[in-house]
Image 1 (tube, rainbow, N blue to C red):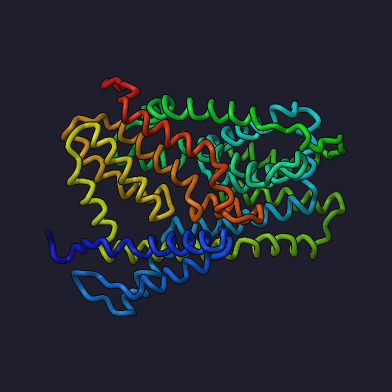
Image 2: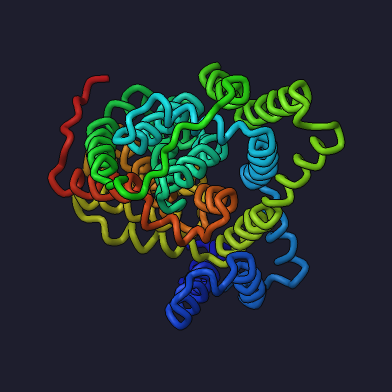
Length: 433
C-alpha cells in the first residue's frame, strides 16, 4: 500500500456525525424537524475540518481547497442549478393556477380509486422519458401536493409517491446518469442492463400500485367538481413533451418556466414585475437546498481525502468469498457509498470499478453487477432524507424530508426485491448478448 493512499475508518465519521445529530435530536424531542438539515451539515463540516489525513498533514488552507473543489464538482453545481430552476417553475405555475387546474382536471376524469396509482404511473413514465429523477420530482411534485389537498390526504404521502415514480424511471431510463454509469463501469450494453433490471423492479412497481389502490379515500376526499382551465395545464404538458424529446433537464425546466410566464402574461394574471417577483420567490425557496448540496460535495471530498471511502471499499473486498458474496458486496458497497455521498451517480462511478474487480474472479455476469449497482443506489437515494431527491421534494412541499421517507414505498420495495434477487440468484441471465 502506498503511503500516499490514506485508509481510515475515522474518515467516514463526518457523515455519521450528521446522521447522529439528526437522529439523537429527533429521539429526544420526538420531532424530526428539531435539527435543521443545514445546521446539521454545518456542524458536520466544521467537524470534518478538525480531522486530517493519516498519510500526509493537510493544512487548513489545503482542507478549504479540497472542500471547495468537492462543492464545485460538476454534478453538485448542476444539482444547484436544478434546485433554483425547480423553485422558479413551482412558484410560477402555482401563481398562474396551473397546479390547481391540473388537479381539478384529473378529479373530473380519473376515478378516485385510480388517482394515487395514476400519479405513480405517470411519474414513472415521465422519469423514464426524462432520464432524471430530479427533473421529474420538480415537475410533478406540485401536482402531488394539489392532489393531497383536494383528497384530504397527507402531503408526504402523495409526494412520496412522486419520489417513488421518479426513482423507477431514473433506474430504468436509457439516458439517466445512473444507467450510463452502471453500464460503462461494467462494460455492458444499455439494453442488457435494462432487461436485467426489469425482473426486479417490475414486481416492486406492481406491488406499489396494488398498495396504493388500497389507500382508503372514503370520508377524506373532498372532490367537489371545480372549474379548470386547460390553457393553464400547458406548462406541464410542455414539460412532458420536452422530456420525451430527450432534452436536458435544465432546458426542460427553462422551457417550462418560460411557457408558464408567457401564459400568465397573456391571461393578465401577471404583470412583468409580478412575474419576475414570482421567479425570485421560487428560487429563494431553494436557497437552503443549494447550500446543502455544496456542503455535501465538500464533506464527501474531505472524507475521500481522509481515506474513509477507501477504508470502506477495502473492508468489503476482504469479505468477498463467492459469487453470491460478490453480488452482495456490490450491493453493500454502492448502498453505503450512496448513504455517505447522497448521490447515486457518484456512488455508482466510485463503486463500479471495485465491484467489477471482485466480481470477475467469481464469474458474476457483468449485466448482473450493473443491475445491482443501479437498483441499490436508486433505492437508497429514494429514502435517504438528505439526498437531493427528498430534499427538493420536501422543500417544494414545505415538509421535513424525514416525513417523506416512510411514504417512499417503491424505493423500499426495490431494495427488498433486490435483496431477494441476490439471495435466490434470480434472474438467470443469458451469457449471450
